[in-house]
Amino acid sequence: MLGLGHSATRLTGQGAAQYPFTPGALFDSPGALGGYWDPSSTGGMFQDIKGRVPVAGPGDPVALILDGAQGVTPAAGAGPLAQRLGGQGAELFAAPFATIGKFADNGDGSFTCTGDGSGTSYVYKDGAGIVVGDWYLVSFEVFGFVSGGFRARVGTSADDAGIGPWQVANGTAEVLLRGDGSGGNFWIEGTPATQGSVRAVSVRKLPGLHALQEGGDSFRPLLMQEPGSGAWYLSNDQAGGRLTVPLPDLGADATEWRADETGVVISGGRTIGAGLRDLPVSQKLYAYGVVNRALTAAETADLTAWLMSQRGV
Image 1 (cartoon, rainbow, N blue to C red):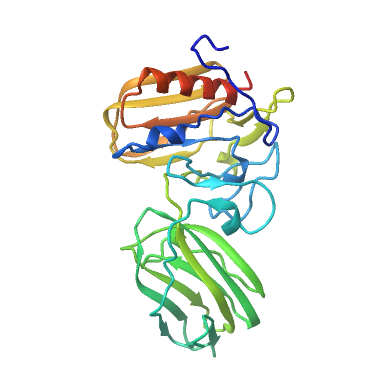
Image 2 (image 1 turned 60 degrees about the vertical axis):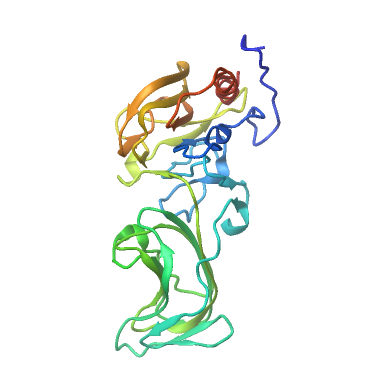
């Protein structure tokens, strides 16, 4: 027992102790804002900020960790990311479409680009509902590839956040992108030399406030695991390794919590304004979160027990 009237029931999952309660329950009430970031949810962590390279095990660097507060439920393991991420929004890439340049709509959900070097080509969805700063899981399949390349864009400007990498061979591309520019539109782009086709194009919102590191490889914390309990944590070097999250204005009665090498801390009555906020820089960060309201005694007890379980206690 934890001295709080709750016991930390352990479930076997990826080698770490798990408590039946999760902080996602704290965000069920209307108007709840904030998020929580859980290193034991290894399927929701990536070595790059576009979500192309998942973490594979202890010692891997972490550039992006998904927020669990808005129903995103990542499953670890192999296979398409679209099949492993629960809680995605509705499909946004739906007819009518428009084309620019050498793209043609084949009428069967596929699009062919016959680039001749004369200019960039696009197939796009006008008014797709892309919101600046929100995250989207984009996927598409390239087939009949000859030359050039294809990439996705969310939003209407050329900000790096909203542009995926070039797909330069047959196969499926998946990427996590943040809405950029003035938002609104979704694009598949072909280079001036692109010759080939795309199909199975999908773009879905990935709700939540996802934490990332854009400072380069040397600034990524490492995912580590306790040898005894199997508890997962992020290990920072106390200098450069950290993740940041853009928070809305959480007001003057926010609750912030963490579990790290020093123990469990739950702090109420915090004033947290809008802007970037660093996840705690700890040698062992087992969990972190924040919500824009006070917690009840029962919620505090449940959260404490969950945080203890994340530490393997």
